[in-house]
Length: 269
Image (tube, rainbow, N blue to C red; front, top):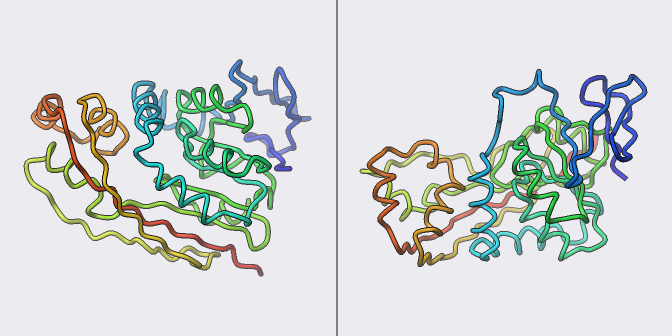
């Protein structure tokens, strides 16, 4: 089993309700939904970091409708037979971790996000996994606690991920291609710009084993679906007033998702 440690002093945590605690006396309450906040205030960069409640619920509606099911299916295929203990970094409202649970009922699953709203929603819908609020830069687990780590459109911290993985463990990364959601970008921006992206980054301590490109169409037929998709993307924070007005008027959107999945293996010293 993964072994949580105190995010303040790194001593082992006793994980029992109503609170997790260490021998140094640090204590972390278990919320009624079942999650634990393991993000010390000194590691917060804002009062409420991560996605807002509105963004989290938009993500839940969009993903539950199945628009990104091909991504979840590919994640399960790439991890099949490779991991009994999985940690999902930046798990959001828990969609991909729930899909892994459906595909592999015996898998021990943990999810982490910096957004308390996201973790609260994830934990409330998935009692078969363990969820906590935290940061990818300081993961509160002993070395070698997991067989696989996933970071789907979230941060990559190679040194910390390798520390948490068992020898020869797996890291699965999802990145967006440059032409991902071109129609959405054309709707909200006056002009499109091309950015060169590194889609197969070299990660210290890891070897890239498999790459998979996913490209599939999505058809949105309601303004709410368009708004939900927008709320899931970084464009939500960059959109201008004029772009937001165009999105408010749109009732249909045909777009293409283009994703790169990179499967790495931790190098054994």
